Amino acid sequence: MATEECWVIFDADNTLWDVESLYDDARKAFCEYALKTLNAAGENAAGHVTVETLSNAQRHRDIQLLKTYGYSSSRFARSFEDTLTFFMQYAPLDAVIHVRRIAQDVFEKPVRVVDDSETIISRLSTKYSLAILTAGEKWVQEKRLREFHLNDKFKETVIMERKTADVFRKFCNQHDANPQLCWVVGDSVRSDIRPAIAAGIQAIHVQMPNWSAEQEPLPNGVRTVPKLMDILEILL
Image 1 (tube, rainbow, N blue to C red):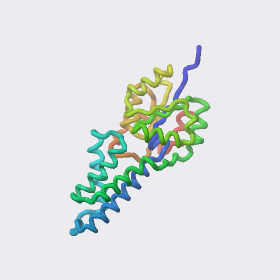
Image 2: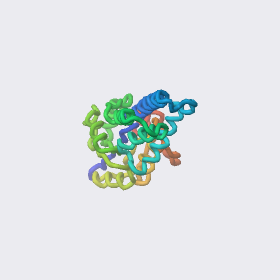
Image 3: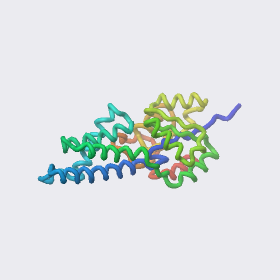
Image 4: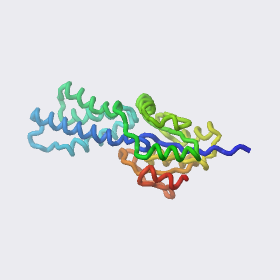
């Protein structure tokens, strides 16, 4: 009888790749530029608008737009434009174009691979089949996967719009894998951990910085680790 294949299924953004820092850098650049633009136009004479005010407004608008735009790159750019025009109704076209460009750069810049990824992948590959299941805009994820120097270490890479329990069940069915022998590793309780558990797969939560929309209470009994390297103590 053939031995059942055991898989470790990784999330990509903010698990294997440090993506959140790109958003943080873009948000900082936007807020500084928007504040400078408001001040130069005389639309912040009372000084009520600050970098913190702009940052909070952008984060709020970004979450509002999630329902319509999902995880597309256009959502983040739209949140920058809407925040600027909320505080400056008649913002110049060049200012609108500039803030949208700041946002778009997040998806075009290379991402930093999480520390020790090469060691982690190398050691796990001796015992498991490895996969990446990543959610997001197709062209963005394809670009990041092409640039990922460890991509060839994974037997399967799948891009989808949103992760659900059915996505994980389908993966296991396609590979004749017993969900109870597989693991999902990810940073998002909402997009990684809960769908994996609902599909009967074991899960490890990695405590990486993430968007507030992805933050939910960790289900009881789920193992959580402060950094990706720590998953080896559980899986090996």
